[in-house]
Image (cartoon, rainbow, N blue to C red; front, side, top):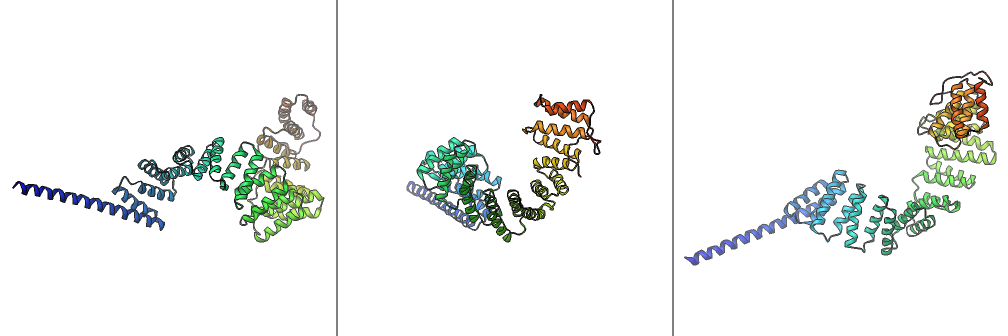
Length: 449
C-alpha cells in the first residue's frame, strides 16, 4: 500500500513539473511571438500595434530588458511629448534590468535632449561614458548637451575625447569651432571649421560659420568662395544667391552682383528677396558711380515690392533712399512714413523721415519722428544733437513747452552746449523765426502727410 502511495506521489510531482514546464515554455513562446509582432508592426510603421505587442510581451516577461527597450524606441518614434516621457520611463526601466547595457542609457540621453532637458541628458551620457569610454558618438552627444546647457568648457573637454577616438568626425570639429568662437578664440575656431569642411565638404553649417568668420576678418575673397559653394550646395534657397550677390557688391563688383541676382530672378521671378537685393545693388552702384541710370533701375526693382502691403520697414526705407537719390522727396516722405508704421520698425526710418519731413517743411512730423526715434533708442550716442533738433523744431511750431523740455534733457548731457543755450534764450523771449502752420502737441507716432 505504501509503495502505491509513493508511486502516486511521484507521478503527481512529475505531472506538476511537466505542467509548469509546459506553462513556462508556452509563456516564452508567446513572449517571442509578441516581440516578433512588435518588430513586424514597427517595420510597417504601425507604432500603435507595435506598442500593444511589446506591452503584451512585457506582461509575460517583466524582466525583459529588450521588450522595454523596443517599446521605448517605438514611443520615441511617435515623438509627441507624452510619448517621449513614456519612452524615457521605458529606457530607465531597461537600464535597471541590465545596468551594464549602454544602449538604454544612450537612448534615454537622446530623449532627454529632445525634451531640452539638457542636464538630465548629460547625466545619462556620462553614465554611458563611464561604462564605455571608447564610444566617440556618445562623447559627441555629451559635448552637444553640455554646450546646450551653456557649459562650453565641458563641451570642449568632451570634444577632445571624441576627436582622440575618431579624428574623422566632421560634426565634432564643427561643434568645436562653435565652442571656440563662443570663447572668442577666433583663429582656433577658424581652423576647426576648416577641418570640418575638409572632412565633409557638404557640411553646410560649417561653411556658413566659415563665411561669417571670413567676413568678420575682412577676408572677402575667402568669404565669397564659401558663399558660392553654399549656393551650389543649397540651390533650393534663393537666400544663398542673394548672399553671393551682396558679397560681390561689397567687393564693388557691381556687374558680377547684378549677373548673379539676375540669373536667380530668371528661376524665381516672384521672390521678393531677390528684388530687394538687386535694388540695393543698383542703388549702391549708383552712389559709387554717380549713375542716374542705375538709380532708375534700383527704383524699378524696388517699387515691385515696396508697393506691396506686406513690404517690411527695411524695404520701405531702402525704397525711400532710392527715391531721395532720384530727387522725388515727396514720394520718399510717404514711403518713410509707411516705414515707421510697419513692425518690426527699423529705427533709422524715423531719422530719415525726420530729415525728409523737415526738408519738405513738415516740421511737426519731423520732430514727432525724432521723438519716436529717441524712445526706441534711448542709448543713442547722438542724443544731444537729436534733442537740439527736437527743441528747434518745437520752437518753429510754437511749442515752447516741448522745446524747453528737450533743451533741459540735452543740457543734462552737455551743460555747456552753445546751441542749446542759445535755444534757451529764444524760448525765454518767445522768439520764433516764422509763424507756424502745423503747430500741435507732440505725439508718440508721426502723422501722415
